[in-house]
Length: 365
Image 1 (spheres, rainbow, N blue to C red):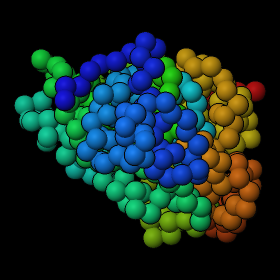
Image 2: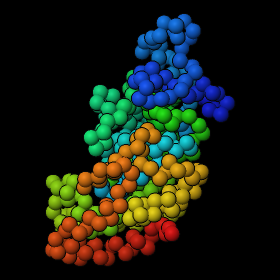
Image 3: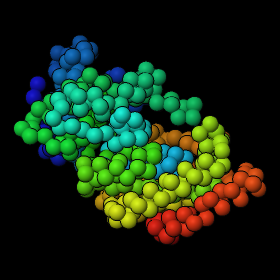
Image 4: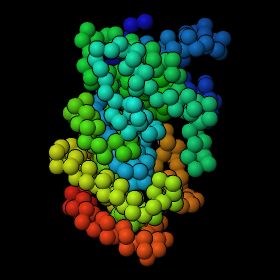
């Protein structure tokens, strides 16, 4: 079936993918829908997968808005920011880390336009969705349903590109975003006009070639990087990922590499790159999110103040115990757990770079 480019504002049927989910997973996700099936199918109360995919293809709307990418060194608060964007009515929020990197997840995928569309999909496809289908999306012992049909995603991707006579790099990535959000059937925020897709990809922004490739595809995109106090950062990551960041000198060196990359990105791409201080995100959440709302040309909404997955409230994604939902202010006090030697080492190794980065972060009151 030929993919049709639809305008959400003109075609109310464009939200069908969202409306079917209550039938699939019951009352857990309360999504209202009106275009479930024909009268006969509604009376029978069942729909096979082939028919489901066919109907979804008829009612999926293109996702052609730019990407606002969150990227910096692991443990800097990227997951928190991604979860704060979740559920905003003017955003398509990618629900987990964006894993389109190829051949490694931290490498921005290079698409060869001389290849076939099937190959492009193979490069970009995030196979983790199959795991989420089986086991749900897990966040600190909480599990949330993520209903996703990979075969439908592939069909949407190929149909979308088949509607173009000449395909550009941006078309390929638009096809992927269209197919991803079209195949994510439990998405509670598919409805409405969207200004940006928001997504997290850890460490990608630490490599210049990645950032160059990102802005080649999305010249209208935004790169948001979080900067965390290196002492506070080290205390958190050495506990959460001891094998990777247990050695203080090696960890501090990697923090420096990230900070230097962030500075290069800001100098090269100017206002398209936004640097946010992690400590401000935690302690001045509303001020930071109001600033980011303006950056992305979206209306401020209170949902920007609550970390969620598909609009469900989440516990903090922190390496220390977090009993409550929401943002954990104790994440600002991690450095008190370091030894004197560790504090001195981090201070010595980052004392030149950290002030330079702080000069570039957004100032909020």
